[in-house]
Image (cartoon, rainbow, N blue to C red):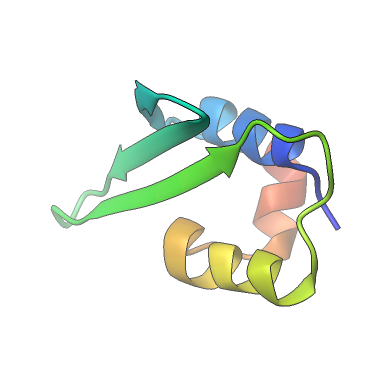
Length: 72
């Protein structure tokens, strides 16, 4: 499973905008069809486990594990 640091690296390399920084990093990405994707990245050092990671990939990033691995 990826770490929070890897998720942050993905966002930075994949063209996401850091729009808020508190105890978490908040990113957003404007898509060509006008939709805006959003994700929140923990500052924690650990891994993102199982179901949470699958939900982030599917609902927030709208990407595949393969694409994520290529970008990171």
